[in-house]
Length: 599
Ligand code: ADP
Ligand code: MG
Image (cartoon, rainbow, N blue to C red; front, side):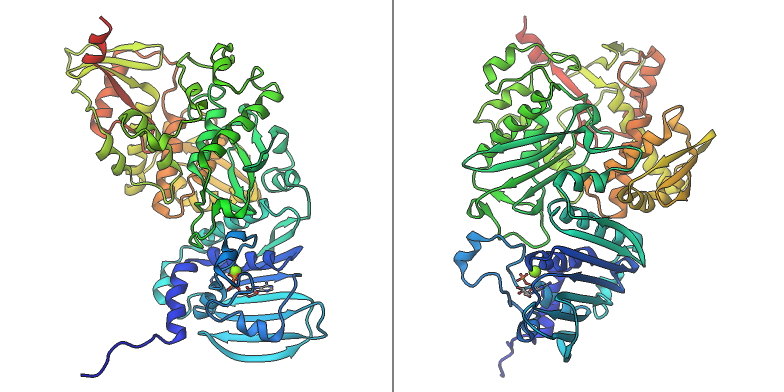
């Protein structure tokens, strides 16, 4: 029998690797722009056509490549950035694997023109299916100009998997803003189908944030306060939003050593710093930049992943918490806060504090780590909730429910007495104990299910507005809105584009009643952005949840017996789980045991 094992040809191996590194136009663009940054560019121009499927072009003024390097760059594991394993621990560049260009040229037609400052002339190379088909000398400016055409032309499955151009463009801009926010020292231009979408001059970080999120009528950064902490472990700088801007426009960004990252644990530190300052369901905006010794983080992450591991996570949690508290305190946003837990408890509560549940102060305890509280199911569920919220992609709702559904709703018969408490909870007896149902969230759960049904069956009911409203949006918001527009219309919104950044709203879903349509739409857009949802179904869920939040009866509304019964009966029909899709608790039980202990 002859041997059957053989090495794969390079082009096949590269195409397989490409499946990992280059998932969609946005990931391709990220790799190209990171290369330009690594090459020291101060101006990066990005041209996109048809959501990136026909063209992605990046033009930089970086250090360029020699003729040999230009050819080498497209080989697998070809990199100028590290030479030995130890270099991995001193990494300050974005790339290091030498995989990106090899992967891209396996699944696209690539063309590059590049010149170093010391060279008279540049090099032009054309590659298709990993094969160099042309190399010649050209006249070109210093820097690198790379064109990626017909992405996935030879991988039909991938090509089919691409979403609409709008969606791919939205992913591209998300990636673009993440990079731009941490590189204000670089000028960026983003052009989509010949239209300039974004032009960002070299600026300070704060100006960069303003340029991205502000619009003329509404300055964004005036609501931000500085955060600064220089310690031996880590340097932290950046901004957090004043509590009053929370939720309306919640932008949450962490960066480490020039890289965007997600970090649910540090997110928790920020939430903790705000505890008592925000009403429930409101999220603070933040832009936090960590600068840390490269060997204190695990850089060897997957190129498409955004989670990064830190060696001193718990210490950094405390530093971040203190820094954000200090920032909020300094600007008199909170009564001046001290960082030790003892003095803290004695402080008068800020006015906004809704109740005196003394829960978040504990977390100043340096040993606090939500990951480690496995023994206590409630604490664990709290940790799971936010992990779940910020995990990518949007979590499966059933996962938490199966694991954590501790109690079931009783059937609401005529004999069961219902009572409203604090205009917030419905209290009722159940065989396990005294049940408390959060009225707003219960209604949210019902509406959420109804909205999803309407989307499935394509039958929302719309209510015309007497006076159409005009909503102004940032570029990023416009893209999000465009990807949601079809679904929004299905459930009852009538939207027309007035100008590139403005829409008229002439009808809304009937369930919205008198709720402000512009605020509602903004909240939906931002919440969808916050979840990082990337597939149509995930958007629908994020959108339905945000809408349900706006439509649901508020906390503070007094309910009649009939209304309470109706709410409970519908909840029983529509949603029996104890948690909302975003992890929030809908109802809980004060068990008979717990009550007994008090007597
Ligand atoms: P990595 O970035 O991990 O090193 P890539 O495949 O992305 O791997 O790039 C391979 C090499 O090509 C880089 O190490 C760099 O030397 C060179 N290169 C790529 N893009 C550029 C650019 N825009 N300017 C200068 N050199 C580049
Ligand atoms: Mg690279």
